[in-house]
Image (cartoon, rainbow, N blue to C red; front, side, top):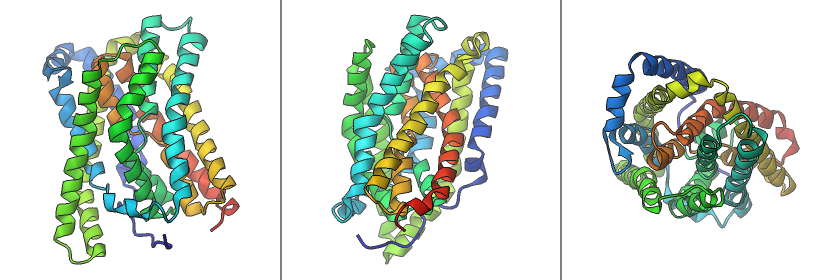
Length: 356
């Protein structure tokens, strides 16, 4: 694949994206307060469900996921054979390493290190949430991280598209296997339904939207510009969906958290270890393989970041709105943004150690 021009897949990082951790934190406080003051409201919201799918949650998840899926361009997969090494690292880290290290860290901390601090039944639920996070590679925010490191925009798209294609088929089996290894019963029908609802349907809608937008353009540059304009228009709905989801979840989780506020810290510890560990594994592999920095940095950042929207949706479908698994996935949102920004800064400082 020839060198590509830095035509950004998405616009510049927005004010809300830059301070996403702050907004998530404020929504956590708002959710806890509302859950304490209006428990009846949250009981009513929880009742709007069918077959373990809460309608309110489903709408918010689709609002988050659909705009991301518009970025997926399966035609970019034709570039795989030209520069395969970066993609090999991405796939190996995301599907052969990351889910298993996250499961191992979850078991280590919640069954052993934190054994005296948490009820064993609750511990299993937190482990499940961590597994759901670890098995869901990033789809959207990685475009932002790639842009902040001046990564190869086209190659980042190739990596994300390949991940999404694999996720459709691999996410449910990997999650089911890891949950089974931790003695957590998984209803297969619910898991598969979650993948269809929150990956396959939004992905199909996103691809159809992208083709529709591109179909009205005469040149590829015009098509990409049309997709970018559409993304800028719908991006606020994705952020609003995320913040509303966080508020809702912490409203349901309020009584548990207010009784045990240190739970957030306990859940964050294995997530932090996983995030920094996975980044340095992928970054070291890219350095050893002498990848150009424009491919190496996004390659490592893709493996580190999570598709937390999917993890939240599946946790709610499998274990319920008030489950520890749902709480663990939301803590992943809180942890991810500051961690990723610190890793972006580290990558930019070490740019000189890679071929340019």
